[in-house]
Length: 379
Ligand code: CAA
Image 1: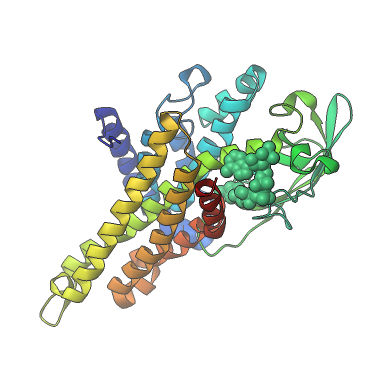
Image 2 (image 1 turned 90 degrees about the vertical axis):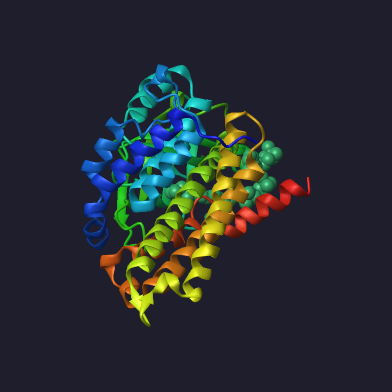
């Protein structure tokens, strides 16, 4: 598999790096401390084309490949995973899902605005009692002829308070189990749609996570994605792609922490020399660099397979599992290398460590990734 980056890839990588350093870094700590959503920065990310990177230009997107997308995700996540999760959900779960399975009318009405960053979207699968066990949907979408009547609660929804359009998974026919589930496009502001409390989180604190409540929300039939009963397959297929985005996010968090630790180790002196001259630190740096490079190759492999329209389910799950485990471990090592300075906010690594944790949880926990991988290899 060829992982050589083209001139275009390098340009995207550079643009993302530049944006992250100049527009995200200066406010990252303050936004994290006060759980402030990066409204201004998200607007600029949309203008720069970071919100519909893989969407065809016909629908207002950048028409780029998945490698470009993971390169941008890595650079932005090195600095601010709160901003990159907004981008990841919009690109991989909302835009990619709509472009792959939406009708022409749905694409014209919603995708064009989502891809340009004019509005952002959310993906609503999880519920108070349906996290890993995603087929146990309690939210219902009852068929009323020309519309569905939507009732229920969704939990931990990224972009929950800021999204204008939500893709909501709900059960229409209980007897058919997962084959009776639908995905509906729901607009903010419709009667009966209420945004619940904002979560006070350990990490990615500048992102916007809410519960969403639906009480007799009338959703027109033309807002269903795919055939009747396609909703669960839609969610699973979309999440396969989404996991590449989160794997790239985890990779970025790990790489960001590593770069900070490397720089710090060359500046900080102990016992008469820089700590980078001590073998104890050298071994940490060597192991971090190796694991991060291995994670990067898994992420690129999954992205490449997706671009080549080959089966990427196993590769995406492996990339997400490995990269998120590396992120948690490498950020902890980065804090250790910084010593006492690593434990205070000013040096960023404690934030990266808190942010890393969620990559082992959302879009399928590490345990779910192992289940997906095992099912693929035992097929
Ligand atoms: N790709 C495509 N289809 C899949 C699939 C996959 N990876 N995994 C399962 N399916 C399909 C199966 O083929 C089956 O369909 P058919 O009957 O038509 O063949 C159907 O889905 C049901 O599959 P299972 O019988 O295997 O269902 P299960 O209940 O045993 O397991 C699961 C399913 C894999 C555990 C699934 O529930 C799962 O992935 N859970 C994790 C949910 C998750 O990732 N949530 C993340 C929330 S979104 C989020 O975090 C976004 C954010 O805010 C950042």
